Image 1: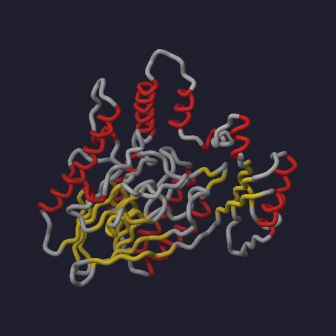
Image 2 (image 1 turned 90 degrees about the vertical axis):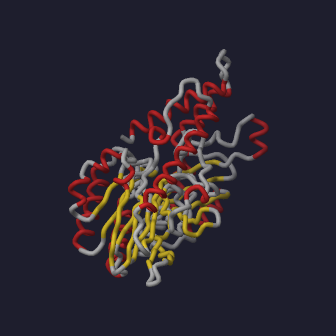
Image 3 (image 1 turned 90 degrees about the horizontal axis):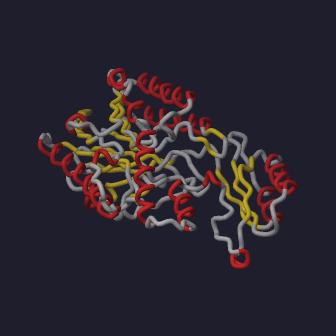
Length: 404
């Protein structure tokens, strides 16, 4: 039996005012070709199919086009779980119809955990999937009036661990001979390498779920949320597949699918399948002349989508003329500059009392960071830490309501 692990498609992402649909179509074509050529039996998507709870219609169309084309292949089933960016209700709305197309959707944690247990048998091999989606606070923790932030964070962590342990016990109870047990998840794990593209899933940047707390009882844990492909700690069988395309300028362009094969001895092995890069996201930094030289040396293949560039100037000030000069130079190389920024030197920071984040645009800030900046100058009677706790409560409630 052959299984593909992927996650974090983020269909419909708005990137500096541009959509990513052309790149995502290239990925979908590659994925379907891989499923066909490798004779894949099961595809697992570990959350964040969409970038927002209310994705653009074009992104939804791409999703359903993928489903239609996959069904035509006639040999591959799919397990899709919800991520923190997804609307669980939207994912699950067509679940009854999709189940007839060999597509199994678990958008939110069901009240009865057995509804998230899926069993497959193919080519004489058996697989049990504990299809766990992103666990929202209401899934793992009940609100307690007056509870401190530390206590709330501890109970959230304990609630997540309990769900995984309960699911491990449930799958073990009815385990068939020689059955491989695989769990999914969409969360932040200890030692995971984050990039600019991920945001905190839980308040307080809860990132303390370790491999030892996720892994017992499972032969493989297929994770989503972190965009860089990686194992969790030293556990090679607990892995993030990563996103199929770079979702921020800080992300590596090395993307992969994870291919798992249940072997004749009823063990399994896994390997990385490199995903071709459809569009490069490039960062050029230096003086104006150095940036223009880097752009001039850029080579763009005929079959490559227009590269997108982030420019950071280390000298002088940005003017409309310089902005235009950089953008025109890039256009001449069949590339596009999406952002021109100015690096603030340590001397200027000291002289003008600026901090290193002063040049960031507002859309680059997380809501928590904006609020914390405001609290720095707050002079009221309420304790600042208490204000932050209250804001985190509200922010979490809003994010969960948007994802319904």
